[in-house]
Length: 246
Image (cartoon, rainbow, N blue to C red; front, side, top):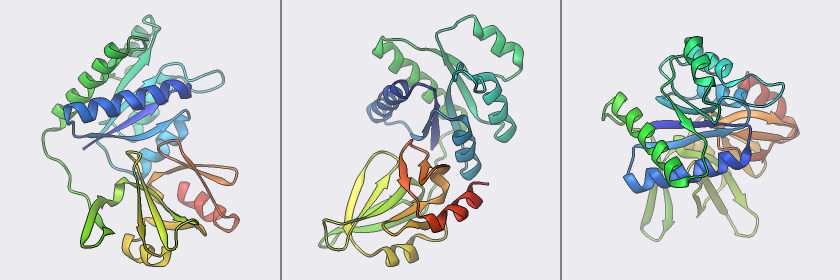
């Protein structure tokens, strides 16, 4: 399964890219998933530190004033995960030569365009190339079965779970939030869930259990997740979360 990472300083572009890529994955039944979406390169590096590839990274060349540019970020990604495939997204064609001269070895370049069909085609092409380059073997991941009805269960992979949240409006209602944007509500208790999911999952707030592998930063009293979401963190857990992130 190819893990796709998006890094751009424009949140609108990130949202558009995520929608287009998810549409392409669904339409062409590609063995890939959007794993991390962020405007902060540090969050991207943290996610890659916590999780295994293979990675396909769509990286903006200009990440904003006072921040590392795309070339510098790419060098850090490569030093941490050499096999990561990096596609630079830009409107500045003259930057392509600087990228090539930097020695980063880009997987390719993608033009930022308002032509959505052209944009989708570019994403599809690079995702299919990345899949072909790693072969057809798909890693099996440990899953958990959720009882969603009478004699009806649903299996979801543990590494697809972002966080679990208790529902105040539903008695013993627990919602699983996943990387693909799904929300699955079942009847359970937080205590039982912790025993089922294992050590990668931790209760960071009285109403939230989070997957440590998807924690990429701490913003005040909120934990930053790999998909760009923020979830609350209890005061007593801040020091522990900082330790995990470091």
